[in-house]
Amino acid sequence: MDFAMTAVRTALNGASYVAPRLAGAAAFRLFRKPRGRSRLRPDERPLTDRAEVGEIVVGGGTAVSYRWGTGTHPVLLVHGWESRGSRFAPLVFELLELGLSPVTFDAPGHGDATGETMTIIDLRDIIAELDARHGPFEMVVAHSLGVTATFLALREDAARQSRPERAVRTERIVAISGVPDFAYLVDRFCERLGLRARLNAELRSRVERELFPGEEDIWSRFSVPRTVPEAGPASVLVIHDADDDMVDPACSRALADALGDRAELVVTSGLGHRRIIGDPQVTASVRDFVVRERAARVGRAAGRPDPSPRPAAG
Image (cartoon, rainbow, N blue to C red):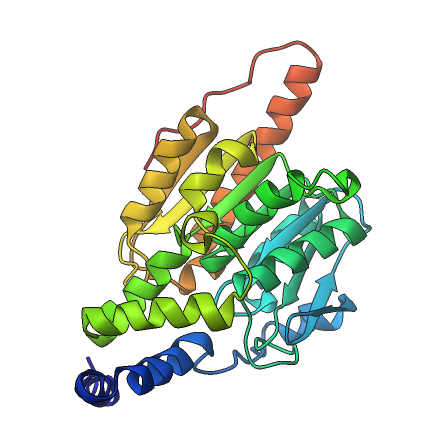
């Protein structure tokens, strides 16, 4: 732990003994806002310059969407916390080569979007709006918190009986370094800072009151294991790095286990939590997943068995 984090831990834990509410408020401010805004990298600019750009007003800001291709065979790419849509650039190029039409975005507080922060509700609403504009998506590729939001969007929008035409559906998901649920984020934040249990409880209370006012049962609703049985994707590629120090790889193993025969698990090494989405090995795994699923779909339509079995979990 570096000096700054040590100082924060000491200050917050010390304050929690004499002024727990103030300490909780300070922890909440640290938790709810990104530490910095991801900048566009030079090698990403040629791609974003080619995109059809749109806007989505959501939560406390305006998200920016990016779309490539002809619009046929659309695929949605969902970024996570402290990231941006352009981080999927290597995968966008690969998907275009396969004749797909990638769509991604910068959520509020991220990339070129306005606002200071985003919530999982914002991500869910962005997914639903992009689905209405460009979907239905043949596949959704999501990273980190984006995985949680994707499963939430699939379950909750499909359950809206009043507007079934807006239900979000997809046959395939690629879940990269997925956060299992919102409670994990709170616990991991407190663990990394070394915060007392009392601060954890205060932070959870503030998340309920200030981040999600009026929302019910957020600790179970915003949980991927709970949404898996209802989301219903036919095939899911689960990817996680063994050296991820932000989200335990065991989370993705549990997701793959919950999905059963629908899931294929790929475990990489040496990439960590963020570099994984731009890694050539991961891009190749997604490409192979698309090609294999396309062949299987054509075979099923013709009444033939799948051309090849799925690889064993890595």
